[in-house]
Length: 227
Image (tube, rainbow, N blue to C red; front, top):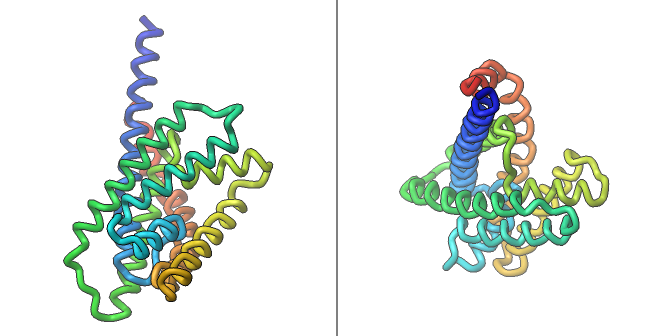
């Protein structure tokens, strides 16, 4: 009887945490779409898919995000093959498709939005960064699965014994540079990676820390719902 109750409570907690993860994915996708719509570049994590979507535009940003995510999952497999958890790979693959579709959905909603002044683009960029930070907040407190971009960095961190935080910064810089290189080679401009990419890289991390710190009462309430 007690064992059944514990299993039921554990299932409810896990289900609720995955609901929080999906909320985080929704916010994250909307944030990426808003930052991209600001037309000042995009977030570092989306720099490569966005640049590719500008070069080969018959595939959407969301579709390129899915392709890029699958590529990162393959790299993760190569790094962790002896100790890989296949359940994590399956979940990451599902999340890749969900995240990509959510980005395209959010982009379609913003399609009619027209920005005429630079300050409007800056304002939209800040709003997008705020939304991304809240998405990251929900993903962190969910403490379940990770998007392939984060999981790949974690795999490299484990494989080469490098601190995750430092490696994440290197990863953001590398993805931004690769995105910039793609635009320079094929488009001869930096339309995919601009000042907004740098601004997003500097702002989002600090906003996530601030949100996690200031939203502790909300975190306690959300994680206490299944107790």
